[in-house]
Image (tube, rainbow, N blue to C red):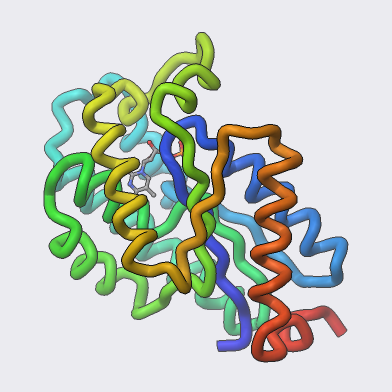
Length: 216
Ligand code: TMP
């Protein structure tokens, strides 16, 4: 596999989507072939599954139904889009990936991180991000940023749920310090992006990765 997989994670309102886009632009300008995608979503089928998952009307959704829908979405995404792009040597930037299921369904829904990780392995085909940026903001800061926006089914969950998600993420980061880099998100977007670029630059400068993925 010649490509590079970089994922963004964080609680609601952490600013990760903006940061993923800014990083994408930076890497494109630096000559990399970049694709940006998201979960849930990323494919035509995945976007349909996203609509079901986030629809605030489906309050009756069981935690395992929810987990399997996120996994189905990921399975399609990996096979249809991510693996082919990596085989072509592209840099794939994802706004959420498998760690989201471990944090939200494993910890938030309390289905168990190990249980979710085992199922994640089935759908990721053994694929692991080379680098994961975890943007860390307190739950209330993330919610303040949402302002008066209409909340989706996940965002409507109680604060305790989102606290479990955040703590789960931080635990995972402590266990995988090489891959998961925690970036404080309670700052201006420019400051956050500058830290992310430094992390990515340092990652790319290792093992000749920069050369490997640059366009001809
Ligand atoms: P987004 O708001 O970042 O687009 O993500 C949609 C929601 O889906 C967000 O509340 C996090 C949640 N989510 C999970 O619960 N499990 C997952 O595996 C993924 C990818 C997202």
